[in-house]
Image (cartoon, rainbow, N blue to C red; front, side, top):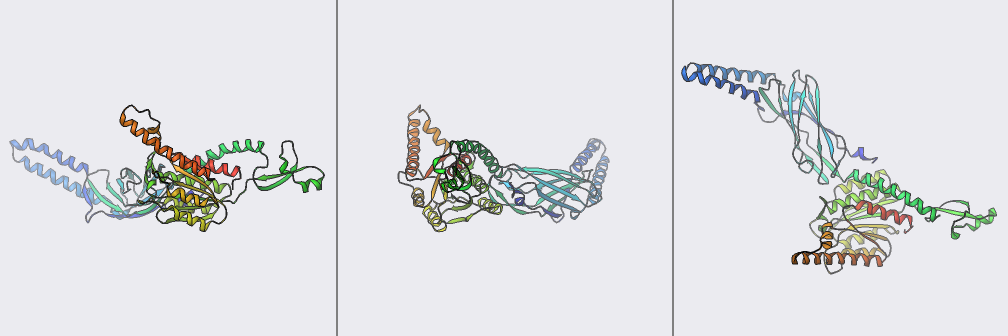
Length: 458
């Protein structure tokens, strides 16, 4: 994705400072040396003067600790940088680099704990670094974000020792920053390339069978066997004295609106992600394909109110704006106002366009409000109504019941599935395109969009 480098978080760096007022501690070898002094206990049982030898040993150990502590560099001699190698994207594993700069003349062994929240990493990552005099060292750790949107990352906490490992200092580098986790950029790129390549073969096959597909004029050429009679340009044929065929291409710069329901039903989880996350990833894939095809893409995400609305436009800068808005779409706890969204679309979009409405319908015997809202748009626009299904519901509906309880569960699931099928069939009878998709939502949306373009439904 051409705008990916612009979404990489900025590098955060800062000099360290003492973690507490003193910021010192005992290293692991300090306790080993103290334990070694216990060997004087045996002789002390027989000759009490060996107690003084043990006390003298302890004094030497404390002196060694003070000397080792004195040789350790001050926290201000250390600098920590956190660098991001790629944008933070939902469910995508990416690496983060921690760099330690040692401005002192001593060699140090450090352990850095980065305060990364659980939304990015299951546990705060810890790395070990050895930095030589006036040198630097770096280490990587990886994150797998589980939540889109802004995430606050805390400071880096440093524990460092000399090679003797008798004394230890604690420090803190204030590298706190806020990053944005975007939708799954890799999935959008992968799915769009895969689907478009598969469709190119199919479109070439169709174009050989249906020449002159599309409504936008491209060029003229001599009439060939197999050309349709309606594509003959009679004025050009009269001038040239032979039959001439008009060639058409698929129209570009058509408005495509992606509408995302962010109500409570979209909080349900399918394949480890919420339905809203699947909808956002699919919206990004579809936007990338549509913009690459020359169309203009608009975005509308709504709950009880209109949360995000981008007018239809095109270009790489517009794609980046779409990504930024999709990153912060949040599911609400209340039911979404679908009629409000339909009214906003009718107000903002006067020209006929493709409305891709990604939603879910409640399990009720009444006609859902979202279906009534989508029906209001059909007189002016072509509506692609997409319902995110529940795979476990399909499995229960197709299960062979072995007990009475399973029989009731299967019957209830079959009723819900049948009710959804009836709703989608009703929308199709009114002229809408309707489909139900599961976690593999992106290919279904792109295929439906390309089919609309190929058939010149707009």
